[in-house]
Structure formats: C-alpha cells, structure tokens
Amino acid sequence: MDYDYVIVGAGSAGATLAARLSEDSSARVALLEAGGTDRKQEVHIPAAFTRLFKTPLDWDFRTVPQPRLEGREIYWPRGRMLGGSSSMNAMMWVRGTRADYDGWDVPGWSYDEVLPYFRRAEGRVGSNTGGVYGTDGPLTVSELRDPNVTTRAFLRSCEAAGLNRLTELNGPDYEGFSIVPVSQRRGRRWSTADAYLRPARWRRNLHVMTHAHVRRVLIEDGRAVGVLLVNGTRVTARREVVLSAGAIGSPHLLLLSGVGDPDHLREHGVEPVAERAQVGRHLQDHLAVMLLRHCPEPVTLVGAGGRADVARYLLLRRGPFTSNVGEGVLYARSGPAQPAPDLELVFGPVPLIGAGLVEPTEHGVTLGTVLLRPESSGRVSLASDDPSDAPLIDPAYLSAPGDLPRLVQGLRMAEKLFDTPPLSRYATRPMPPHRDGDDDAALEAYVRAHAETLFHPTGTCRMGADEDSVVDPDLRVRGVEGLRVADASILPEIIRGHTHAPAVMIGEHAADIIRRGGTADRA
Image 1 (cartoon, rainbow, N blue to C red):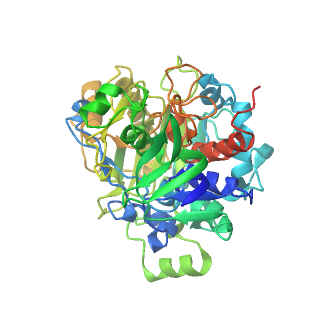
Image 2 (cartoon, one colour; image 1 turned 135 degrees about the vertical axis):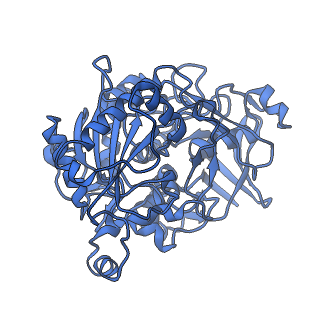
Image 3 (cartoon, rainbow, N blue to C red; image 1 turned 90 degrees about the vertical axis):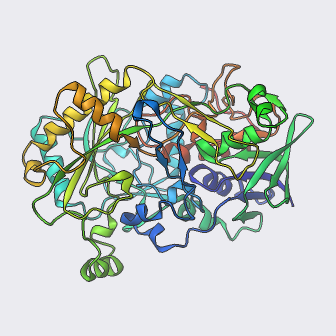
C-alpha cells in the first residue's frame, strides 16, 4: 500500500492532520489507528467517559512504581480508538497561557504564532467575549449545558473569597475561576473523530485503517519510507511518515525503529539507526490530588441514570449525562514568585475515587489540586523489542523538591474553598481517604498516598532549536529524513492548561508546515 503521507495515530493531532492534508485531492493520505472505531455509546455521552477506562478502547498503561508516591504504580488511561484520547477525556478545552508558548522560545511557536491555529480549529458556540475564540472551525467548543447546583456554589464561593471571575477562560493570561468550556456539541462529546474525520471520510484520497498496530517505522538509507504493521503489512510513504501516537506511543515507536539512545536500544536488541539520546526523556505530567467532602443533599451526579435522566438526555440533550465531571476550575499561583498560575483547582459534583474507577455510593463533591508546572520529569523507555509490550513509563513524580510544597499549598486553598459559603452547604464532613492531621507533614503524606495523574503526558519527543532536541521547529526528527512527530510529545515544557487543545493546534500547525514544503513561518 503506497501513499504520499502515512500518519500513525488517529487522536487529537493525528485526526486533525489527516483531515487537513487530505484537503489536497492530489495527496494520498493513510491514517493508521491501532484501536478500533468510536461507536461505543459511552464514548459519546459526556459523563460516561470513565466507563471506557480499562476496556479494549483504552491502552490501559501503568507507570513503574513511584518511590515518592509510596511505591504505587499509577494507572494512565489513553484512548485506543478513532479520536484517541479526545474520545475518552473530560473534554476540557484549555489552550494554555501566553507565558507557556513564549517561554518555549522556539521559532514559529510563540503564542501569537500558534493562536491562529487554535482559532482555526475552534467552532465556538455561546459566549465569546472579546472574540477570544474562533467560530468557524470544525471542533465545537461550548459551555456546559446543565452545570450542577454544587458547581454554581463553587463559583459563588470563589467570588466570595475575592477571587477573579474569568469572562472567557482561554484568553492569553488567566488567573481566576470559571465554568469550563468543553469540546461538546449540543450536549454530546465532539472529538476529533467527529470534528475532522467524519467530514473527511468520503474523500477518495484518505484511507483510514483501524486495528493497524504499527511495529516500527521503515528507515532506509537515513530516510523514513513507510511503516511495518504488527501483522506484517508494509505501508509506504512517498513523501513523509508522521507519528501522532501521543506522548507514550510516539517515543515508543521511535525507539522500536532504532531512533534513540544507542546503548538503550542495543540492550533490548534494537539496532540503532539514528542516535537521539533524548527520545523518551523529558516526560512531564500534571499530578493531581483529590479532596472529597460529603454532600448532605442528593443533588450530585451520584445515582444519575434514572428514567428521567435518560429521557432528558435522549430527548433534550440536557441533564447530568451532559456533565464532563470536572465542571468548574480555579487557576491560582502557589506564591508571589510564580510568574503565572501554577495550580489548578478542578471542581467535580461527584466523589472522584481512584481516578474514576471506583463507583461512589454516597453523595459527595471533589476538589482536585493540580500541579500545572512540575519541575519533575521522567522517561518512557523500552521494556522489550516487542511492540505488543507496553513501554516502561516513569514520570518520576515529586523527584524535584519544589513540587510537593506547591501541591500542599493547593490543598490548603481547596480546604478553604470547601469551608466558604455557599459551597460549604454542599461540602460538609470529609469523605475517605482521610488524613491524619492538617500540618505540612500530614498533607505531604496525603499527597504521597493518594496523588494520581490528570492524564496529560507530554515532552517525550521534545521540540527545540537546539541540536539535542528530538524534533526541530518544523517537527522533523533530527537524523532521519521524511519523518516528523506531531502530537503533545513535542511540547518543550508542559503547559498551564489541558493537552487536548494544544494537540489539535499542533495538528493544524503541522499541516501548514508540511503543505508549505516543510518550514514553519518565522516571526
């Protein structure tokens, strides 16, 4: 099978890129997805996304034991279907701040240079104060249709605490509280499979293959010429191969293909093709710690699913099924030395227990403290040369000494908001897991025992202008011609937001770079 472009991974970036490149009818594009379709009903019902965890639609990764989290292995869900993780995330559309992109100092990727690609993707419905959002793009960004009564109380408590209400969350600089904008259309999840792939599937020059698990990139004489599937099928690329398999999948494929640290590759029986020691390194993630309080009134999402709720959703696309679970947010600084918010407090009108894997039995609410700018970073590495074996994932949580004190500061902010009316009406006694005391030592122990991922891995194919970076500013893998990476793995530093919107932006930007002949615009 011969194409002009072969794209590996049909997620947030890959689906976007495939749709854009196939707009040129003269270009034959293959999009390869290791998983299946996104037809399962729970994919499209916003509040049901945790029911996709640990199913065949989930890569179901786990980290190696984390010594600073009491030796726990942390569950990392990643979407394995059309739309990738955009088909099983919490749908929060948060771009990141000007400080993030300008701080990268990478030509072509400043805030002002990437902003048009966010706006190109966005099809905002609802409020758009100041014209912050794009309105003509394929990816619908909307307001939550039916925020829970406890979420509205959270917002009012933030206001009572003297915090800043954000009129539009996705401005260049945000510090304050807001209801979250979501990638939904009329109360239904709107993934990149919905926004980009379905309108493009009729094109004769776009071939979307599901259950197409890639074994390795085919590299001949220093050039990527295609990929080899696990079933032995060769898919060749006349122009380029683009990896959009995410912050775990893309570095894993590079390593399996002989692009990485030569000593590490030989240790696992892989012959080096290109020496790129940074492949898989600089893994960053948003670590989160949940505080749970009992709600004395039966108004939360617990128990949703009765006949009335089902009817409201099916007939009106209203009610608790439209919730994204993380309905309200507060962006704050852990201290005055921070140049921009480094903490996010996410409010959920439900007890979020065990990364959403445990079904709650009593009404409660959650405030999650998220460390947006961790100093810690880790690595994705080979477990073996078998592509069916998951790679070793070591985010090295809390390995930098500054991370834990900032999370503790976030927990103190969350407790204070819980105790502020009107939220205090709905957040009374603590729910398990409990902690032993309120001093720093007790809070630090609570973080180590209960912190989880917020599902935002980045950085493992770091982009940069320096020779040590894995990809250059045009997303070309250094040392291999005809090979690029376009997904959240290229982020030089993790953003102060969520990773779905940046991944879509990267897909849009990559399409323009490739169509222009391989170079990004330079300011």
